[in-house]
Image (cartoon, rainbow, N blue to C red; front, side):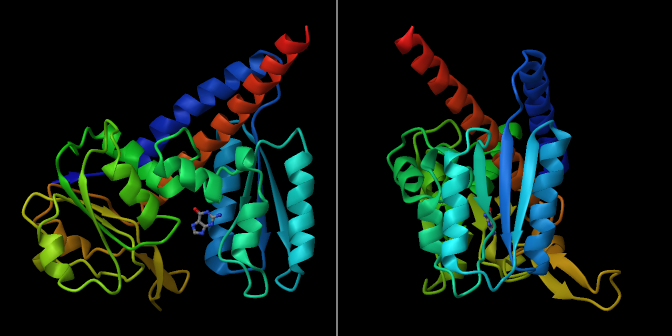
Length: 302
Ligand code: GUN
C-alpha cells in the first residue's frame, strides 16, 4: 500500500511556488497578496485560516488576515469585499466558511470579484470549471488532483466514486475526475446521503473520494481490493487523552481500509495539506493573471 503523503506533495508544490516568488521579487515586483477574512471564532476555522496565512508567508507571499466579530452585519462584510476587489495590491480574497447564520453565504461568495476568487466558489468560476474553461478550481479538489498527478495514479477509464456533493469538495471533484484531463477521464458516480446501496457502489470504485464528514465511515467491507482511497474528512472528535481535547479523524477507517487499498491518504497529513497547496497555486495564478492583464493594457496604450 502506498501512503499518499500530503507532506511530501505539498512541500514539492510549495517549493516551486517559493522559487517563482523569489524570482518575482528579484524582478522588483511585489509578491502575490492573499487576504483572508475570518468572521467569528469557530475553532476549526481559526486553525485553517492561521495555517493558510502561515503557508503564504512560507512561500514569500504577502498575507493579511481581517477578523470580524460574529455579530457584524452582512453589509459590513460586503463593503469590505468591495473595497478589497478594488484594491490593486490584493490578488486573492478568501472568506472562510461557514459564516454566521445571519449572513447569506451565497451573497458573500458572489460579491468577490471572480478574478480574485482563489477559493473558486463564485458561480462564474464554478460554471467555467463545468465547461472545461480556465477557472480557479476549489482548493481541496485541486489539491487532490495535484496528489493524483504526483503519484501518477492511473485515472483514465477508471470508476471513481465520490461520496459527498458539497460545492467545496464533492461536486467540483466529480467534475474534475470526469473531465478530459490527464488525471481525469474517469466514469464518476457522485453519491450522497440519499444514495441507496452506497456500499455496493463503493465496492465498484477503483478510486473513492470520501468527503462526507463522518469519521470512519468508509470501512474495509466497502472497498474493492486495490482501490485508491482519498480521505477528505477532518472532523474533530473529542478525546480526553489528546492534548487539545480532540483528535482529527478522517472519513475512512484507516487501519482496516489500508489492508485492501493500493494507495491511501492519511488524516492528518493528507488532503488537508493539499488544500493549502491548491490555494497557494490559485493565489499565484490570480497574481500572474493580473500582471498579464496589466502588461496587455500597457501595450495597447503605448
Ligand atoms: N471551509 C471549509 N473549507 C473551506 C475552503 O476551502 N475555503 C473556505 N473559504 N472556507 C472553507
